Amino acid sequence: MPKIVVLPGDGIGPEIVASAIEVLKVVAPDLEYDEHKFGGASIDAYGEPFTAATQEAVKNADAVLLGSIGGAQDSHWNTLPRHLRPESGLLALRKALGVYANLRPIKVYEGMEHLSPLKPELARGVDVLVVRELLGGVYFDPERWINEMEGFNAMRYKKHEVERIARVAFKAAQGRRNKVTSVDKANVLEVSEFWRREVVRVRESEYSDVALNHEYVDSVAMLLVTNPSRYDVIVTENLFGDILSDLGAVLPGSLGLMPSASLGDGAGLYEPIHGSAPDIAGQGIANPTATILSAALMLRYSLNRPEAADRIDAAILRALNENPTKDLGGSAGTQEFTQTVLQLLKET
Ligand code: NAI
Ligand code: MG
Figure (cartoon, rainbow, N blue to C red):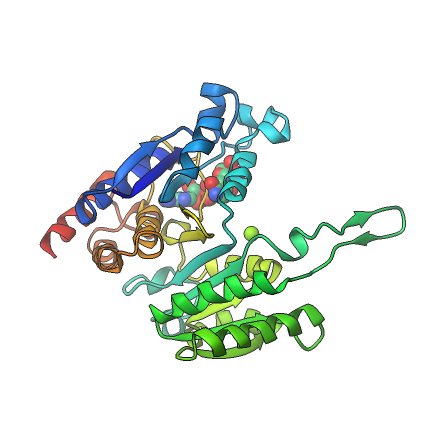
């Protein structure tokens, strides 16, 4: 039985994670759950955001499902030393799992085009997967300094780092529309030229059935909002991916719709991209969609159950249209929306 470590976290986290588990229980009844406090909730109970017991649990998990962490700006957690705050738990969790690939689907759902800042004709059918390298590049390179005269960081990629992220992208494309766009700045950067060369090599030797093209990051920044339908899977390095995935996150029109997966060689980490929404926590009105879709990504990428994931995706699409939550202009609360999803799942 696959073992899922569940970290509800803070704010709306416990509410939306409970919804996702109700949904999982219908489409994958055999999963086993091991729930732990994490982030602020763990600080209040044990004095630290990511305890040794939780670290041990995630090491033995098949996948980790996370809600969200953190408090309001004036929260008592924000008065703690930095390494004891909720956010440091999240960074430590990502590091413990060695998740080097961050996947963010950017999808404008049918019937939800009016929420998107794009014109309806551009918003229609948008379905892009951004695969961002998460553990390398300029954010992590050990060669870095700052002094009176200069600041320095380096963008460096090793062969194995490009290889493994390229594989994630090609494999994901095979389950989609079979097309990868590798994004770089190879006209000016050697590291990008190297990145491009390695991505080409991985495709030729392992994924020759997947179409590959290369585009410059500045051009993609424009095309992602003027012609997003041209993309299937976008793969890119850490810094470019950080910027492009945040840019892409505005396209669906609500944070409550955006799931994510972070993959490494072991257990994957699945979480909504939004935070703990302290302004609406405890009111029963949070949109659980992003978390339920994150659970679907877990079924797809960590548990190899694409049919179960497809069932969730289809039920969510219908529920969004039939009984939308408040952030989408509807009136359903968290529980009511979840019940609609469960009902639709039982009908399929
Ligand atoms: P946020 O994403 O929590 O909220 C931004 C706005 O979107 C709020 O008005 C909120 O009510 C709304 N919103 C977010 N998710 C929603 C949902 N599922 N349904 C309906 N409305 C939703 O960002 P904010 O307010 O900047 O941060 C709050 C806390 O969350 C902070 O402590 C921050 O550090 C933390 N945070 C945690 C993240 C994580 O766990 N990965 C990511 C981003 C922020
Ligand atoms: Mg960012």
